Length: 256
Image 1 (cartoon, rainbow, N blue to C red):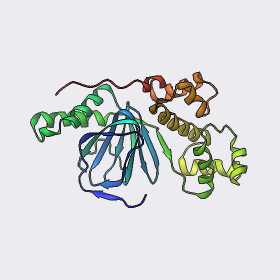
Image 2: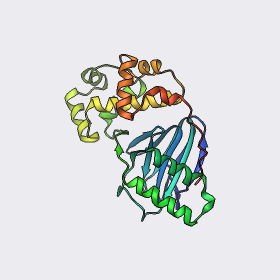
Image 3: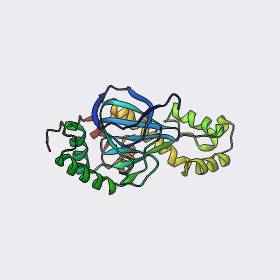
Image 4: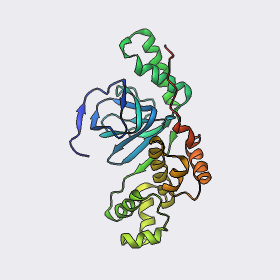
């Protein structure tokens, strides 16, 4: 990640990003919560990509270089927290499950930033931090390979997630044995080849769904044998069906 801009303070605000738009690589001295109430958000660091649909948020620790990218029309909510406020006690990015209450807190806190340090806003922030501290982490990280041998194989599948060849067959194209590749997946990613490929396919599925691609087409393009098999894996990963991502999120009118 090159030409990283430095921002001393992470902004708290809501902004819209067009499909495919992004925020260039930067870092800040504050922690940040990035949440997309509409669309799918991808945050990329040197360690890989974290992806979050509308019931997930991404925790970005202070000092971590990162870039944002929008898939679909993105309503992005950013919450900056000073280094002393780390309810998760984490120094690396992660994806968090967003409960209905946490969603409402993030929306309210980022849409009404004019209140400044009012007592109402201080109380709202305290509840938001409390909810963050109990938010479960979710395995929605697509690690980036660092060794050339593993990168060659990952590039093949990035180009075509529907490629259903075995690890041995893919290894022959990449010039690496399947035994060596299996060892590299565990050493670099802490997961098996099958687990990584599923993460890759789910990531691409989220991107396609954000672009309003039909569910059946998404299943085919991402390598599932049928739409029902895709829906089952997606539901277990995200807690809802892929079809719900294609319905625009309702506008929030609640005030605090």
